[in-house]
Image (cartoon, rainbow, N blue to C red; front, side, top):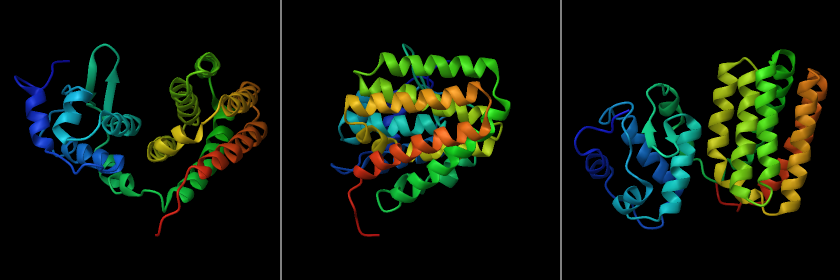
Length: 248
């Protein structure tokens, strides 16, 4: 798909402006989201590289990378390896608006998000067990294998973990549930990355995912819910250890 006509990167970076040094990732994501939903950039436009966005905003590339990752999970942008990052043509018109405030939640509500995510993941697993197809099971097995092969690389492990959970959500047959889980996972992304701090934890998470997959393959809703409950209990505990308490 063609990039934004003539000088796409200059147009987009000029529209972004700069942000204060030390700006939180959530603020960077909000700035990008506001631009992407303003109508100033056509759907399907190719975005500037991370380096150029970072230079324009006056911040480090890591903050831009995390903000783009959050927007990718929300379905706002599409990252195509070897091609670039594009503004999605099929992004919901409602979801970005209703969640723009959510990107600014920060730490005070993170514990509540962790609890909500756990209950929704359990519900999704239970629903998926009743209607999951063979193709979806094959993809889940592939994601589990990717997690196993990435035990020494936490970034890739977390990416495969995300795909595993999103596949289950998609298999639940409830688009609202799937959208909610995608959004919550986006808001928790930074904490998820911080929460996986050792190879032992990755091994434990891998075993928990394997139990969920076995229950789904057996198409046993009760077993799927129980396996996901165990996983969410330990995953939630890891996430909560990364939260620095702040005033509400």
